[in-house]
Amino acid sequence: MNTSAAAADEPAPGAGRFVHDALLYGSEREYLDATVPFLSDSLAAGTPTLVAAPPRNAAWVTRALGPRAEKVQIVDMTIDGRNPSRIIPAVLRAFIDEHAGQPFAIVAESVWTGRSAAEYPVCLQHEAMVNVMFEGLAGTMLCPCDRALEPETLRDLCRTHPMVIVNGERGPSRSYTDAETVVREFNVPLPGPDPATPVLGFAVIDDLPRLREFVGRHAGAAGLVHDRSIDLQMAANEIATNTIRHAGGPGAARVWVENRHVVCEITDSGHITDPLAGRYAPPLTSEAGRGLLVINYLCDLVRIYSIPGHTTIRMYMRI
Image (tube, rainbow, N blue to C red; front, side, top):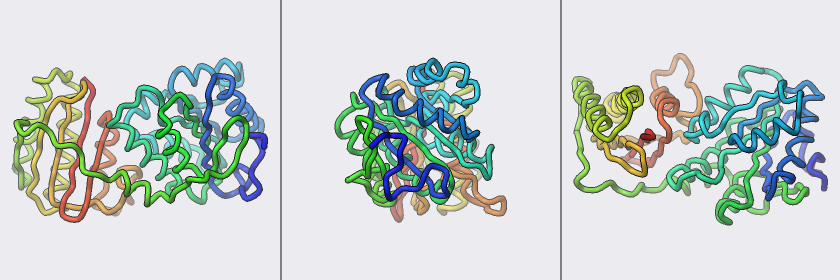
């Protein structure tokens, strides 16, 4: 089946049901053979069009489209999408909301060579949650994935996309799995830090200045630049505030260096029940839900492990 044609059980793009396809490509030519017709059709129809990709692939699309590329919003995923938990609110949702009420066409690549082992599980959770976040919207998202990546990565991407394009053929993913199952599978305990890692306990709002000083001191000693150290202090303060107000306190903060990142971890006895928390703005009337959204914007990576009676949140800042 030609990649521009819809499967028999799929609606045409923009027909009122969200279409989320994976494109497994092995070369620049395969990438462009799928993305350029998709983008050309979108532009011809006047549909708002976004390409969120690493610089190499964005350059391929720009050259192939020529002057038409000026009508496409192009985002560098290695910057705006470095934290996979930020992709939905800051890249995808922001674009869709900018064109509210209109169909949309998006090429979005969340996994590429160079993604770290720490980032990868969050990428898979992101792709699964896309199916929930945009269900019912009139739009199409095409998610390229380089076949040079590990076979396990390709299998996982097929689990998070209902339809897959390979060698120009589009068909149902035989391994597609519901979002709740995928998110649950990647909600696993995080490897513990060194037992000698500095730790600070906190329990009341008056402890927060001490917590910010603790995070800033250790981040600075690790070589994090001043502005990013301030961002990490703000992020830690947001989560610690949530711990005190919503998890009932007390909590513990730890800071260490891991793979050229300063990592700040907050643990408490709360439980995050909404897997989409931090990926959308809560209603203005809500007193909760903004802390995770804030840290997703501030940090280069956020990892969460949460079960009844225990939550670990890790915030990463690149040195």
